[in-house]
Length: 205
Image (tube, rainbow, N blue to C red):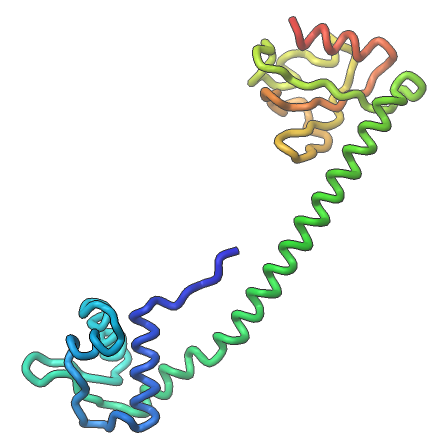
């Protein structure tokens, strides 16, 4: 998760507002021109122009041609600074969210790994347990690709019931008759002892 960044021009606006509130610039006093400020902050004059525009919009300074940039309100400078007083706590929340997302991804990975182990174990036992699902991969060139389970009459043709799909690392449980069969899918199917051979034959036709 990418952290939100305060644009450079807004950081300059905050810094100038702090200097005004601290009394380094007095109300009614002119501050340096844009070129001088650009040099002080090591940014382009356009960046300084945008910073000054923010301060004008919240009525901290006034900028007119010929008169330069004049401080108009220390109180408004305080109000503007106060908007950013919770930035530290926001950053803490971002860190907490990042940690939770990592934990969620770890748990999902463990869950998928466990499901895969169950499927692998069930496949080995499919001849002794008719409810243990078998896995059949949809290879390139299969004529049933981009068709639904219902459209290909899967159960009628194989006697097997699709109870799940593994697709790009995700497990889809009970996909239903209108689920599309896509290349690379692994179909999870239950049926009798002959189901596996019938399904393989059907998918290779």
